[in-house]
Amino acid sequence: MSFTRTLRAVGGVVVAGALLFGSASAASADQIRDDQWPLKSFDAESVWKVSTGKGVTVAVIDDPVNGDHPDLKGNVLPGKDVAHGGHADQEDLNNHGTSMASIIAGHGHGAGNSEGVKGLAPDAKILPVGLPADDEIAGPDAGGFAEAVNYAVDNGASVINMSFGQAFLTEEDKQALSNAIKKDVFLVVATGNEGKGKLDQLTSHPGVVAVGAVDKAGKVREDSNYGPQTMLTAPGTLIRSAGANKPYVLANGTSDSAAYVSGAAALLRAKFPDLTAGQIANRLVKTAGLPQGQQGMKLPDPHYGYGFIRPFSALTQNIPTGSKNGPLKTPKAESAPAAGGPSAPGASGTGGDQAGEKNDGLGTGAIVGIGVGVLAVVAIIVIVVVRQKKNGRNGPPPGGPGGFGGPGGPGFPPQQQGPYQQPGPYQQPGPYQQQPSAPGAFPPAPPTQPPGQ
Image 1 (cartoon, one colour):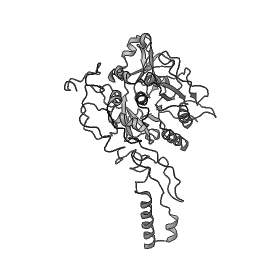
Image 2 (cartoon, one colour; image 1 turned 120 degrees about the horizontal axis):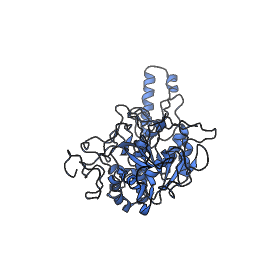
Image 3 (cartoon, helix red, strand yellow; image 1 turned 120 degrees about the vertical axis):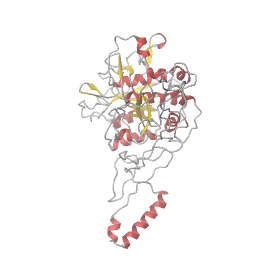
Image 4 (cartoon, helix red, strand yellow; image 1 turned 135 degrees about the vertical axis):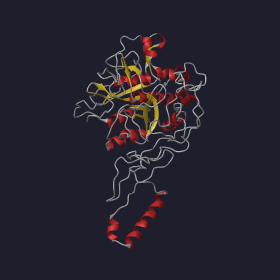
């Protein structure tokens, strides 16, 4: 089937993780590295003294990746192109997959790798998994999303980057995601770039980390899609990355933001190999930051989630391990609805620290047989009481305002209360700064902010 990729170029206008594609042929190699403002903001040199992502495999489900790019060569595994067959590490006409791979695990080139694009986790390996875009005509044997996820999981990926959108998930797709979660894979998805307040089924699926975009000042990008499922934000404006059909590209969008979160997850998985995906998410959430003037907001916020990532803090702060699932929702246990009972496709999601709730439904056949009146009322009460005792609690119906598969309308509860609330005022010099006296603080504080804030 042809995979629906909403974060792609349409009619010659790029609307995805790359809105401002531009050739860098006239730019110097040093300028390319200088353009990577997120590395300065993260104080990447300090980060790499702690972790470089070595030993971690990140699957990039996207366009095939140009593994021969000088900034990626040696870091890209053969992978698989489920759309067309063969490997996915060969040069592609589209830049998107190569761009994401370079943001995650580019190593640069030249003397001391000081030139070109460097990723946040430069020693991680990229497992490229090619998918057909929505404007492609795929053959009858072309694989789809479920095959791509399963391939990534079966071939050693502990992080999967999905910088695309998918409005509809089949049962097979949901099962593949659930299997990845059971195998403790860290799943990262971009929220999208239409500025709308409703996330698609992939981004809303329990267990994934939904990522929005922020600018150099740490403020959310106005075109970044949002909703109560948003967990984190990361740099997503004027992002320089490697290209497949051109040396380098410039981009805006949540695709790039998701890639930075995947890179951060790779750093953490290398540093803390015994932590679960939920505990990795816990470290990112507990150390996330907010821009000046936004410290008092209730978290998670639909636009910011718990805030933007701060990799150095996530790697070095003393964060309690926490529960296995951390702030992540868990897919609802599959169960067949009672005869005649309602079904709720896509409805799922329990709190990360809670056990899954069963959806037994309330069958109508017995009630019809009993008839109407007092007898029916008594029968219903008895059934409800019995089921409450069996389940231990009577949760909200899936798919409604309290269910993860719901539309995200008013009254949708936050993903996690209590332990994931942002602690206290945000104190750091510059929006992404990791250490009180770290070198290369970037960007400079606006004139209206107090010095050092």
